[in-house]
Amino acid sequence: MKRNSRLSAVLHALMHMAERKEPMTSDDLARCLDTNAVVVRRTMAGLRDAGIVQSGRGHGGGWHFARPLAEISLLDIYNALGEPIVFQIGPATEMPGCVVEQSVNRVIGDALKDAEAILMARFAGSTLADLAADFRAAAKHCRADTG
Amino acid sequence: MKRNSRLSAVLHALMHMAERKEPMTSDDLARCLDTNAVVVRRTMAGLRDAGIVQSGRGHGGGWHFARPLAEISLLDIYNALGEPIVFQIGPATEMPGCVVEQSVNRVIGDALKDAEAILMARFAGSTLADLAADFRAAAKHCRADTG
DNA sequence: ATTATTCGTAACTATTATTGTTACATGAAA
DNA sequence: TTTCATGTAACAATAATAGTTACGAATAAT
Image (tube, rainbow over all chains, first blue to last red; front, side, top):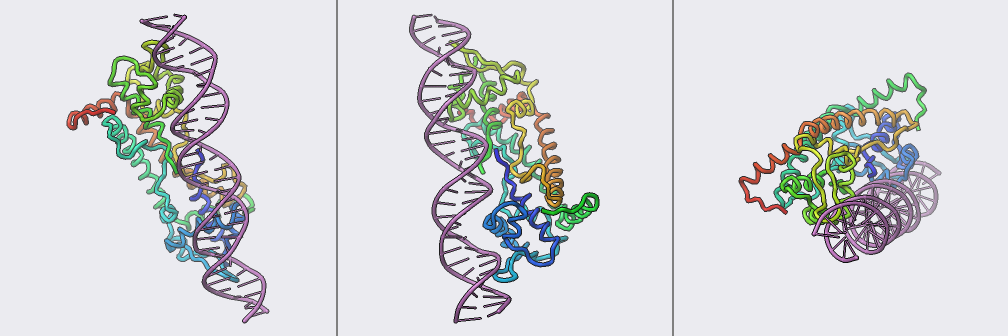
């Protein structure tokens, strides 16, 4: 099954934005992400609605941050993307009539819930500023050929 | 995105098998799971190859366990299904050239790895015998209308 | 004002994964 | 030898994501 890479993709885009002062157009970002401008707008729309980024039209328009990087957690972004589903694996039916299936769903569901909580905690504890610092530290060693 | 329910489905099937002495045919199980016999065979094939269940052909044939329920963990089953991918979310490209993307992948990847470890630990610590006991305890309260 | 730029969004196509179905071969018991 | 049941290949159906095209709306430069 193909994995959903929207979170990675949007973080990639935001990090490129963080490296610049001027707004970046959807086309700029599309080139960074090796995709299409419409896909960028579609993905960024959630972040705009969540007040994480702002978009401007016309000359000099494009995407820029709506608040400081240190005040934007990965969890904020994850939630803004509207992707509550973390796992590929899950129950066949949400409300099964079969008691056997109910037991199975409970056990699997509990385990998934715990793992999801760990993941969300990690996301909550990491900001875009952290990520940018991480990137800059890594870029010190290898040459920073951003693309 | 649709979730992969093979783990839940196969556990459901195995629990029904656990409630019976005689082997169950793929058709029997397909009725339990509200699906097709070929799908059942396809899914069970992995468990057979892993030595968790055995299949017999002809009259009186069908599926039965190859070893005691207490010696089969949920992790064994998970692995037997050949589904190493737990998460829907993941990196866009595995080996990105862009340094920014590499940083993003590292952060996301670490978080996912931790969450996956938690999940696998939970699966490893729970056997089919536990699951069957859980079911029987639950069935004491409500009437056991298995289906 | 007019033009060029850029986002917003709808509609459609392409790709891919899973699931469901059909068909037929193989093996085992009655 | 007939019936039952698995093993498996091939194909269709379903569904989600991503990519593309097209056009409308807003904004800045001229």
